[in-house]
Length: 561
Image (tube, rainbow, N blue to C red; front, side, top):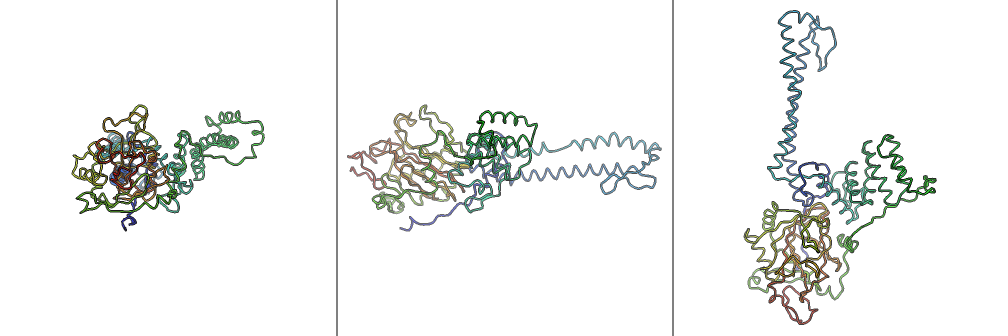
């Protein structure tokens, strides 16, 4: 069936352009988690183009008019004083030295005019010199941003954007130099970063105690012609990162270089003494003989499947067992009267456990409506604390989400009814439709959608999450896969389609094979919406089988064995 293989359009948004925007425009307004959703960054870019740039142009024009008036006053003052030959004292914008025409003030009229010029006229000049509309224009920009409801980044967002870039670099093994030059692979996706841009990324890595990337980015910053002041800052960070990575000699020599550049540096000499105390006499007596640079990437409190997760994100999937591959196929779902007229296209992408793609089940107009309704409500996504049950922010989930109820709009209700037709599951106890937009390096580390035994269940009488429906409402150019770390497989986002899997076995036990993750978006924009369907109400549509190991072969399979 051709629908399994049909090509899909790609999104043209370029992520690194937004990263550079963040590095340059981060010092506005209060914290707003702008980096966690690309839609906020798109709005930020549009606002800067349509609003801020115009206000700046108006300010420049206002200042030019003010300076022109001051220049006229200057010429008038100079031209009021003539030498005996009557030549002007002001030529070509410059005051010409010469003899003052003292006779010009010997009559009372001229004397009066001079005094007036030095009093009331001077007040006007003084007013012009002090009159600067900068504060008003800045207020206009700020008021415009508030009026347009555009969120502006702050220092936390700058850190978040830099950390997102580092996450992309690590996950997709992007060389630092190529990334700093604006390249992802062989594709030029943005302008090159400056020395200061690289320094900011390195400093964010340093603040995260990620000394591997601190070394990478501080060294890159040094190669990009930093100013003297910036170079001194870079060297101090670089020295400590070298020490933390086991390069004691290099750390000491780097600090000595800093001391030579700035003998009055407030910390350089004490830092030299600090490093020397941590080195052996043999090392100190043989500083010229440098061992190879050590820069091992260390992970602390990390997810256990880090390597396999990143390989899957790069598209390195495990080969399917032949007995599994033979059961993958496409079919038209027609098990309801309405579906005989409008069948749903289904592609089985995994068997045992069953995972399918429903093809072309959400239209462009529906996608736009969902995004329109969700955008004003987007808030940074949270996770549930397994011990307390409380919702909290987490670095391993970077996105913004909103919840939409069926009664809010006919299209949301229509999507809910379609989900029922797609899955054959009842939705009375299902959660509302959740809409998510991923930010810079937006991702969700490996996790289960269901609540495991021993965790505090947040679901109450609804029971556990029996299944997940995930609509892809955009198609990133690179990255953003949904991957199953235990199964060694992944699915690339394909706009208009929905990925579906069962979180629980038919016995009601959690299926540990469904541990999955949302890979970081490398280039492009990722919008998804998902529906979590709960156990309660499924007793007749997904009954317990006669054998505990019985699994579905297709969606809606209720055979007892």
